[in-house]
Length: 135
Length: 135
Image (cartoon, rainbow over all chains, first blue to last red; front, side):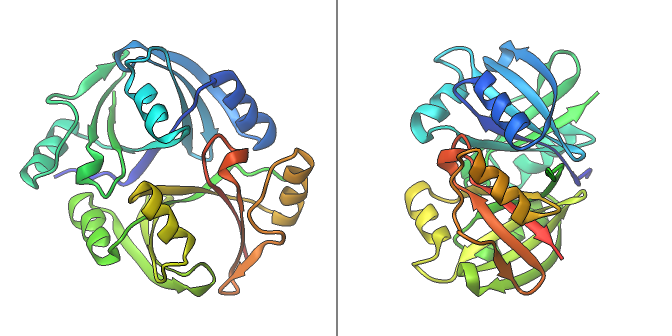
């Protein structure tokens, strides 16, 4: 079974992406790497370099986005932690065998460059854990 | 001004440290590095290696612990993100000049090995950011 040993990124839910980028770059001194639209998750994302991991700022682009619902319930803040894995299909099978609830039946492909799924916070001590296989 | 470019750790608030260690090691395959008491923060901590950063599991040891109050209000889950800095006093001065609210007037010394302070979530888009200077 391939296990994750790397942190891919930390996701932070924000209302206003430009304002959040300004805070993380001008106040905390992080470097903006890219901004991308992820229509599959109804979010606009800014990736900021933090050592050899990233902070991923997520602004919902639609009220039906899971990130909109998160902000409504809990306010802005840390949304998820993402672990980089070698074989997402194998890991999802292993996690289901252990009785964990995953958010998607099958991993979702994002921009042809990564496959993702999430471990439900109810199965992971309240932590939303994204698992990512990068191509 | 010295800025942080490294993630020191991610803090996760849990009710039961042993149960949480079991989940992160047996299910997610992380490696337990150490368990320590931090009476200054009224928590017992387990550090788990995740690539070249750490997951820090925090179990409150007293109902007056800030982590107890967090769990009461929000449930278990991601509690803070910690950035490693070179000069915590210089950074605190800079952050106050920018109008940010810090949790402690002066950085706290923990076990003679690190100095810490926190940026209040109200000053940081809902994210509790710990800043750490390691000796």
